[in-house]
Length: 449
Image 1: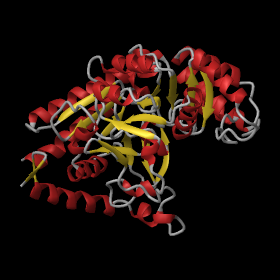
Image 2: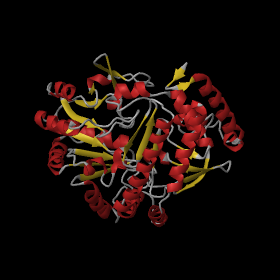
Image 3: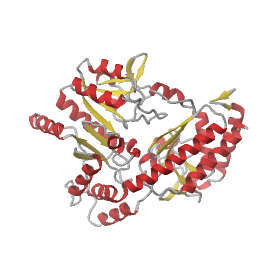
Image 4: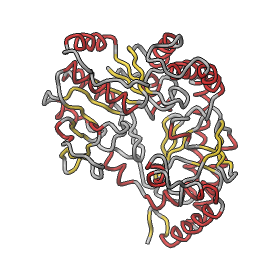
């Protein structure tokens, strides 16, 4: 029996070997699993890593990470984009140290706020900005604005999408119908009353949904990244913009992952024109921060809607958002870390990584493919390219991927746990990329022998 072109017996044998190797070398990580935490970890999904038990980190710097058991790893996960520009970039670390002496939160803007706003516009385009703590919050607030200014109830999202944990996006497409995503914990509301789900790259499906006149906003990533990566078909994103304009629907582009594309994200690199722009994770160099912005004409519509509402809580905003530490880190990241020079370095090495991994896949005659969006690279254990979320979900091979993740980790390479994603940072070296390619080849040589 074969799984994704790999003999199942060889896969099981390597899985057991790599799991024992991992566990034997990490007694301190094993001992650090604490009964004080639910499931033994401070965030439940930390148990979803394919490793036998979570590795405990001692420190991280640049593109290297060291665990409490002393193993040093080339880090290509980089906090699943949160540390896309490397761990503790010097300008950000300096900004944190300076701001820490001046207070952590005021509920008022700091002196850095005006410059951070100017830099956001310079990098991402002409929007009127707001700060949140997570991209989930940013998407939630942006959607509230869209509903307020259009008077419409629904959001259109794509099957298999990623927009954090915003409830409105937790829907799926089954048999052509929008349903609550299977597996949601404690979900009691019928999410389909406020959301409609369509397949990515399906403009006909989008038009059919928008023509009903009840969709306030299309919320989408420019490239699907929550499952196996799906690129937009030629003309799809422009077609999406045209349909939104035709039917009076707002277009929100969520760049939380695709900010890897280049300076200004996929939106700037490919000339997109969203009404609302959202990004999170790495915009402040790893400090929990997200941004959302409205085009000037939409900002005016928002101001009118806000002025007309009854007094009371708007349902938007958190006390710790827009704190002075976020502004200090935003300013440092946008001015000194998120630069064209750093993106050029990242793009060149990511291209080298994609080519190297693809060559290994070809060498071993596997029915896999490798895809890249700027500094973001994924190997997918299925033929490609993929067209939509249904195909992306079917392309996952959890057993193969789990074995590869643990085997790579045992060879000194850490990649993202939930999909086969690798990021290249400004701190990543060519030798690290070559080590990852060599480790990938070594593992597949064993599996395909």
